[in-house]
Image 1 (cartoon, helix red, strand yellow):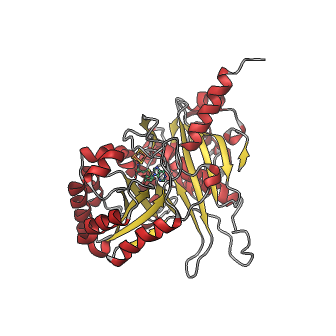
Image 2 (spheres, rainbow, N blue to C red):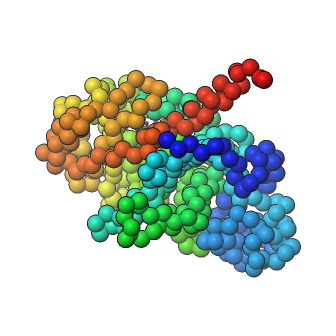
Length: 397
Ligand code: SAH
Ligand code: SF4
């Protein structure tokens, strides 16, 4: 594990940046029309918003002073009244193979969240990918028993700007230092973010409005231009929000955290199942498929001795058969957390998957990555807080 010492973003201390940004508007929280309105209220021409958007999302600027086509007076005003993502990097880790990079961000009110960059070399026909795993909340209210974030409880929703800022952090990093897979000398470097997955801390559909706003900002043709097909929202299964999402003009990929094939078992590990049992969840997925014509991914965290037998796979196949080719199962061997769960061995995983294949259910297994830097979200924060507590308790010398 390579652990990088805590460092503050943009070369200023956390306290300074937090005090400075407290009363400023976060530009990363504004859609283009909102930015036009904000500038108009300050007596500026609305077309300046497009220029500003281009600086933020195309040049990936972090400093108003560099925005050379904006008049000096406007730059001054921005300096006084606005900021660009009030977040500070408190800790950063790269996996040994440098394909996974994880950061712990401190928000303006001191809350801590994690974001992860996952780098994939080119494979066959498909080019290299750089995927950011984004947090949508500080903590989470849903308490799934295998999830480190779920065990922390809920702090608060993230603003749209706090969601966008996580993506921009890694976009700037890759722009400044493009990545090439070690051992693949002929392959092209990658210098931009290709995908985002809402699989970090928190439940994205519990923070629906800010989430959708952040996705629209990242999708904007005048700005970051990330296609909706390159965005995946993962949900614990909030039925009304899934239905709402199916009606959105922005058609992102949907992933459902299923993790068990029966109400009895799912209720034991995922308390939300008592509110939205499988029948309702699957009906919402069917409606989503009908409305969008898109495939749904079902995430299935494999917990040895709990939900990983061929009989469970059989039940899962039966559950998903009505969705036909529109269902894909992603098997995820559980990452160890404080809870007492273990991932199954390769034979058990193979046996589980072959039952799904036999029943015609498309499936894949998530390759383990970044384990040496605590890949399951919530773990970096947990460790950081433990260290902080230990430091606070240690006798002062
Ligand atoms: N709240 C959303 C998104 C964040 S969690 C959701 O639950 O879908 C992203 C994914 O990581 C979910 O599928 C979640 O179940 C899974 N996950 C949580 N804890 C995990 C662990 N310890 N090991 C592997 N996957 C885990
Ligand atoms: Fe929350 Fe998702 Fe973790 Fe469940 S798995 S506790 S919904 S973050």
